[in-house]
Every structure is written in structure tokens, then in C-alpha cells.
Length: 155
Image (tube, rainbow, N blue to C red; front, side, top):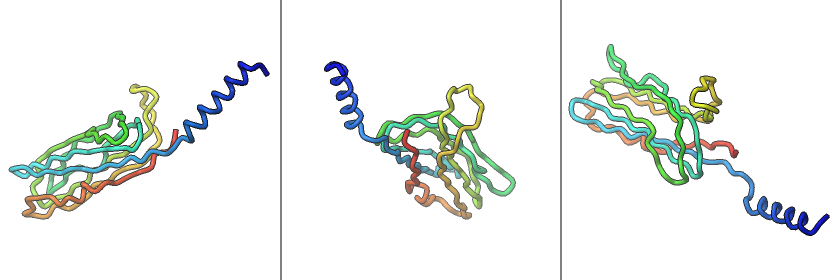
């Protein structure tokens, strides 16, 4: 083995050792809910990770339902997060005349290879936000603001 090849191999081994093993990323989600005049409920989905991560989010669930009505803005999109920085990828607002129900689910999927790829990608986790809205409620509880977390596999 030549001295140059030996130095290259040692340098590569050192780089791998210093990089350490790939580690899983924790992704947390929460929902803020604000009720404005005329029973307008505004929802914002917030996501934060402890590492760099890219993913596809898909909003599912029934949305807001009350007697004879259903309101929702399901959608999906790709997103990426930088370690420690919370981002708001989705928001929705609608009038809900109580009593009614909130059923919002944020599914986290593997990012598709292309934005034009329609093939379903694997589900990594989901955050579920469900509650009953009683008649006369003027201020929503803060339950949705509790962080729900999933561990994403190491790449």
C-alpha cells in the first residue's frame, strides 16, 4: 500500500468516525386554535424537529362539523424543517356554530421523489386533534397546543 493511499484511507476512516452514526429525528406537531367574533375558529398547524428533515404532510379528518354543516380545507404539501425552528405549513379558518366537533389530522409521509409523483409514500406518523365544542363556548381549551411527537427513522 502506498503512503498516499494509506493517508487517504486513514482520512476517510477518521471522517466516518467523527460523523458518528446517523440518528433518528424527533418531529413534534401542535395546533393553535383561536376563536374570533362570530364563532370563527382559526387553526394553525405548527411543526418542529430536532434535526434537518424533509417530508410530505397531508391534512385529513372531518374538519369542523356541526348540525347539518361541514367545513374543512384539507390539503397536502412538501415541507422541510431546520433543527429547532418551528414552522407553520398549514392554516384554516371557518365559522362553527356550537355545538360541534373538531377533527383535524396531520399525516406525515416520506417525501415523494418528485412533486409530480402521485404514488402514495409511506406514513411516518400522524398528529390527531379532536374535540367536542360545547354550546356557549367562547374560548377554546389549550389541549391542541400540547406537543405530539413522532420519531422519524435515521437516513
